[in-house]
Amino acid sequence: MSSDAMRRTEPKTLPAGVRNAVLSEARILLAASNSIARRPLAALHVSPGWRRFGAMETPSYGNMVAMLLLLIALEAPAIHLLVAATMEDGALREALRAVFLGSSIYAALWLLGDLRLLRQTQGVLLGDDVLLIELGQRVRGAVRLENVIDARLLRSDDTTDPTSRSIVVTPQPRPNCRIRLRSAVTMRGFLGIPLRGESLDLYVDDPGGLVAALEEALTVAKRDAGDSPSPDRPRAQV
Image (cartoon, rainbow, N blue to C red; front, top):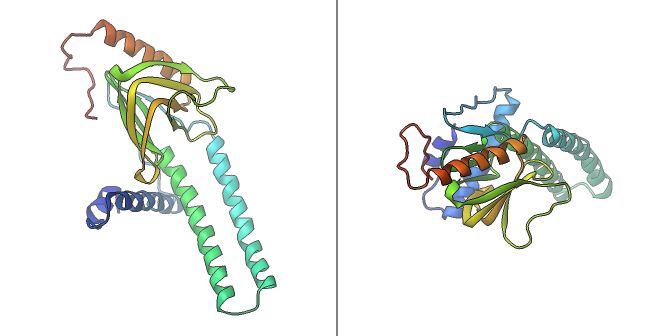
């Protein structure tokens, strides 16, 4: 079942926040089942006029997921034996075993699904007048280039801007570039939770390329300010 089909069949009586959370988790579990079934990732298509900056070429998050899955596989039987050794036989012991086993299975499925969704979403797309962001279930949103002040690379000792709220967009341990905005934007985060910030802290595989492309796009936008848009320029509905 596709995510669109799940959206059509979800109960309409649920509050919006609950519906978003249910749909988010359903997408992750569906992605996990596709990984277990070894279905190939959906091909990523970039329309002419857009530039894509991915975030999953670096294997660090994939390696972390593999390590966590190994820990889950080792932890589950250990907890099973510990419960058996410390509790008398009965309904409570069996219930605890079921809870621990269920939580371990769910955690493993969640990690698999999250990793697959990160790999099959676009990351960052730069068009003529808009920056689109889609990073699995982590962050989805858009920023008009007219709202961008500038972009710069982050050093290893940089931290999230303490003077403004920042939306962190990264599957890796640390972001590597920062985009400052003229006004705050709202994006959709994990479980559909709104994220609002006055800057974006991003991780992309080619941060220098993204910063240079944004600077070029901003320069062109300033030069063409007041001109009517050309029909061959990429536009997006935000």
